[in-house]
Image 1 (cartoon, rainbow, N blue to C red):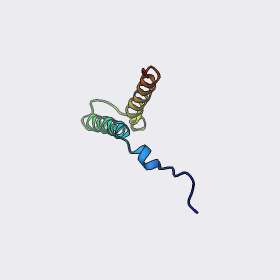
Image 2 (cartoon, helix red, strand yellow):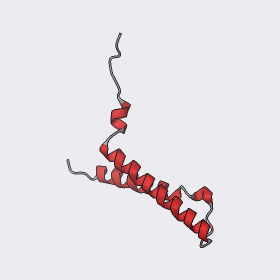
Image 3 (cartoon, one colour):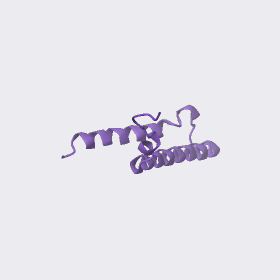
Image 4 (tube, rainbow, N blue to C red):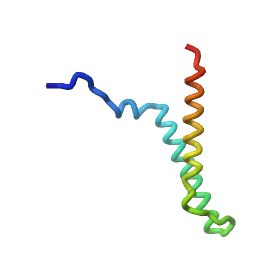
Length: 76
């Protein structure tokens, strides 16, 4: 007996918009880690490695808020 409804989560997650968001977060994370690594090696700035993920989370929040506002005020 086959299920009545088939929910395909992979196709919903694997959209073009989500790929762009993930690439943006990965780029932000890479840039913040490389900046922290260079700063730590040169002694230019003391970096607390526990807060290295904050820039990527801020970018994610900005993207989510921007998308929500865009969808709220979208003309139908």
